[in-house]
Image 1 (cartoon, rainbow over the protein chains, first blue to last red):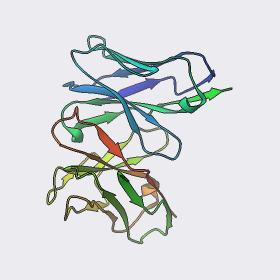
Image 2 (spheres, chains in turn brown, orange; image 1 turned 120 degrees about the vertical axis):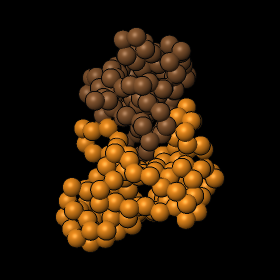
Image 3 (cartoon, rainbow over the protein chains, first blue to last red; image 1 turned 90 degrees about the vertical axis):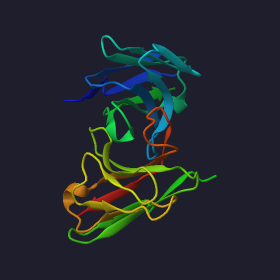
Amino acid sequence: KNQVEQSPQSLIILEGKNCTLQCNYTVSPFSNLRWYKQDTGRGPVSLTIMTFSENTKSNGRYTATLDADTKQSSLHITASQLSDSASYICVVSSGGYNKLIFGAGTRLAVHP
Amino acid sequence: TAGITQAPTSQILAAGRSMTLRCTQDMRHNAMYWYRQDLGLGLRLIHYSNTAGTTGKGEVPDGYSVSRANTDDFPLTLASAVPSQTSVYFCASSEFEGFSSDTQYFGPGTRLTVL
């Protein structure tokens, strides 16, 4: 069964600290993996997308990594800010948009 | 540019009643989607439309119907609501379907409570 599992479920960090969120998947075939940021009460917004041949991609203070062999991805946030408080969702595609598998997300709280 | 708008923002609905959730995009995207988001679960696809005039079933289509009469609008209808349809509903669009590397844009969501 195609699944995307994220850890931890929730995380609290202090402003200015770094953190890493994890995503493990068992989706086949694999097309690409993306990370979304979802602020409370808003829709998800795309942060990064990686295909099979890419193992790292950055978007400002966000850096995503992909290990297609172990089927793991991580999202690293550097020098966290209060505005980083949100849910971060890992999504794996096995084809078109009707074949997206969403993880349940990691809820990140950045405290001053 | 507004992007994707959804209406209403929230709604409380009695079980057995019907309701249409509205979704409009101004980006002239070909593909549109409806998802539901439940606590502790990932977003699940309800229905999608690759282009105006066509629709398809997603992972959880039962109890829902859609239409795509034009490019901009993609309404979701609950014919006879049940409490298990209590959820947050997101509409999304992408320029092309079939290219899953294409960016998907989401609306702000509709929070629906069925009592």
